[in-house]
Length: 442
Ligand SMILES: Cc1cc2nc3c(=O)[nH]c(=O)nc-3n(C[C@H](O)[C@H](O)[C@H](O)COP(=O)(O)OP(=O)(O)OC[C@H]3O[C@@H](n4cnc5c(N)ncnc54)[C@H](O)[C@@H]3O)c2cc1C
Image (cartoon, rainbow, N blue to C red; front, top):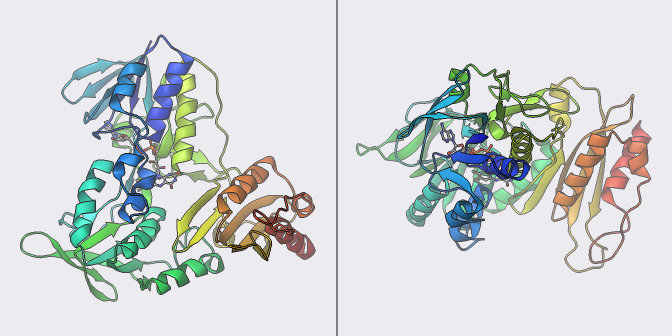
């Protein structure tokens, strides 16, 4: 049995390891266009921001460890075509390569800003760690940067560049930060903290061109509201699935451009699986297909695809998308969607909000936290949540994600038991108070 994985990111590596676990005698081959695997791209903005002192710390395993484990990784090697009938690949420098089972994990790209000048020097798409190491040196001399749209990674980069004392202008067509994900009042403290960090925020504005000098380096960014001088532009547009390979092979893509997979990560082609950001996955509440989820989703999907490609049986459920991040001086997070997205989807919902604290009010270092819950009024089930606070967002997002998945009602959440211990939690759990407020409204 030869299992080939195209992609060395979270999904591809998760798939390779799981395939080997499910089928220890199988030959496992991984192709990646990058020079490395097994590093955490998620840490890159924090190295740029100097919270982490070295890119080396982001590596999770060495190349030798992969050689020893028996997973054959081909670095800087592009898979150029897939023939699903012949069960072969065309591989750069290797020619025709056969497979018994194939896992496509080709990931994502930043959406093309769709304006002139994207080929200039000075446009940084934060992704590959080798490029990040080179860009980090450029940041030493960068004076002025433009962040193009407030996607997750761009939000982290905004703070990182301010920590490096680089002037930052954030240009986003939305009315507030991350307006396609976060509700305005939830993200307002983040906006405020960027104001405190002297970020020039231009909401409702759009980049119309990147302009450069004769040598081809970026000098300024043209926008609807005028020119912004800049020697660096961070492209923070939304993620799009990287699927030219699958598309050319005739594998079915969905409305988002992601590969359609079944509950076992099987694609429309026989013996071909897919995982990670190149796929689309139905949302558990709305049933709307989603693409561009997180690294933790990619890894879990990769493991599912790997187990199944190896001959095992594992299912992957629709997603409820717990999320969280550091933004400005705050932590933001949630589950499913907030009020803005739920309204855009035409869902019927009622909200309940609580402003609380993360430890006992008298305990040093206690932080504020806002929890907003959304429930479907007929079933009274929790369908979404949004939060902003000084700490404790990740655990609450994971917990609320599981609650949404199990279909629990807000009545049950309103009477939940909670931990009270002055140094780690207040008497009144903000999740319970938000649910009580929601129940009163219902
Ligand atoms: C800066 C940054 C911060 C992030 N922060 C977080 C975070 O905080 N939390 C979180 O959960 N996730 C985070 N992520 C993860 C990210 O958002 C994605 O969800 C994750 O990278 C998806 O993994 P993937 O394996 O599906 O795709 P990718 O990581 O895009 O990997 C795709 C792989 O496919 C290979 N490939 C593509 N085409 C070919 C081809 N034709 N031939 C050979 N190889 C090919 C590429 O070389 C690459 O190895 C972050 C990512 C970045 C870059």
